[in-house]
Structures are given as structure tokens and as C-alpha cells.
Length: 256
Image 1 (tube, rainbow, N blue to C red):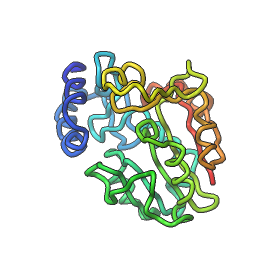
Image 2 (image 1 turned 135 degrees about the horizontal axis):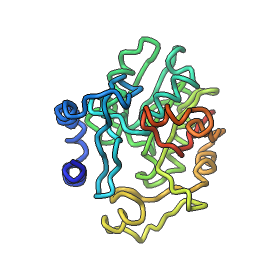
Image 3 (image 1 turned 90 degrees about the horizontal axis):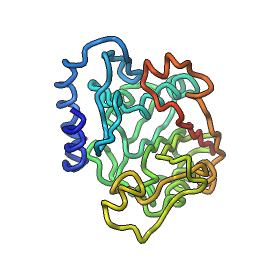
Image 4 (image 1 turned 135 degrees about the vertical axis):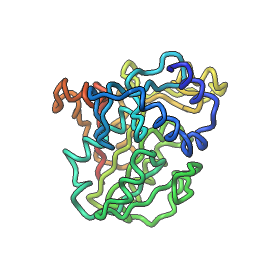
């Protein structure tokens, strides 16, 4: 199963996967019936989640067959439910590179004025380059932008644009892959070969790998950043296992 999923992720273009991947995953769910893990995004329960990853070292117990949430999505859902006003306040929300597992659910929430945007995703309603967001400053209460900054040419400009369109007092979640062995962000523009990028930056479409300084990088965009060790400090081991969460991931809560 791991090998099949790795091949699919590696060779089928992402826009096509975004359109049809959920049907394939739901077909596989019959083999995962159980009650050992639970998805806090869609509330489905399984004996375990599907494996996920582009190479042979793909992660076990990662992908929810029902909604396609990954570990980071389940973490974000729990964090927003327990530590923000996302599910209770009337909010205007910009969701960049929207994830399949969230779109329908957020669109149905009556407290949200919810806008999805991306430069290429067929799931997004607004076609948008994050380097030049086509909305006036002080437009949104919340911005969600996960696993984007490792792809863009100028991530400081992209962060600044998200800061610009937030209202004063607004907040954003801007997560990215990190390697904590690096003190600072690892970049090398001379690495252009896709295979080399995968070796150095985890994926062939990544331009960098953020290190322990990621919070300070977000501050360069204008944000006040709180590095919240929500998983490590506030959740029990049983919850981390039940929801299959990334045990050491820091949530970067960004405020304007």
C-alpha cells in the first residue's frame, strides 16, 4: 500500500489528485474499519489511517480515508477549536492553498465569510499569486496558509502580503515543514534539479527548508508570533496517538 500511494503522489500531478483523490481513499476505507484512531476534522474512526508520502519512507497512520486530512490538518483543527475564536466568532477568512478536508466544512459554517485562493489549485475559488494578493489591506480577520512558504520565490513578501490584508487584531496560521537540526533556514538557489531538491528540501517542488528560526522569519513579514507547543504541552499522549498528530510540531500563531 505504501508503495502504491508513493507512486501515485510522485507521478500524478497535484491538481488531478485534488479532484479525484478522495474517491480512491474512500474506496480503501473499507479495509481500515475500526475505532483505534479518530479524525477531529470529520470525526471518522478507523483502526488506523492510510500511509502517506512521496517516497519509500512514507509515514504510516497519516491520511484519513474519509476527508484526506493529514497529521498537520488534524492538529490545526484541534488547535482552532480549542485555542481560537474560529468556530464561534463572525470572521472573514482567507484560506490560501485550501485543503480538501476543510473546504466544504468551512464553507458551511454560518459564522464565516470564507474565501479560498491559490495560483493553480482547482479547489480554490480565487486564482491568486500570494506575492500580490488582490485584496485591500485590512480585509480579513483570519488567514490560513499551510505548507506554502517552502514553495514560493519570495517568502518574506508572501508573509508581508498576508499581514497586509489582515485587519488589526487579526490572526493567521502559517505552518511550513521544518528541520530542527538547522538553526536557520536552509536555502541554496543553485540546487535546481528536482531529484537534488528532494534530497535537500524534502520535495522536488520545495525551494527551501525552514529551521528553528521559522518564527523569526514570520516576524519579518510584520507579525507578532507566538510559538505554541500545543501538542507537547497541552495534549495527552493518548490524544496525540488517538488523533495521530505530529508530536513535535510547533504551531506558529501570527497576529497583526
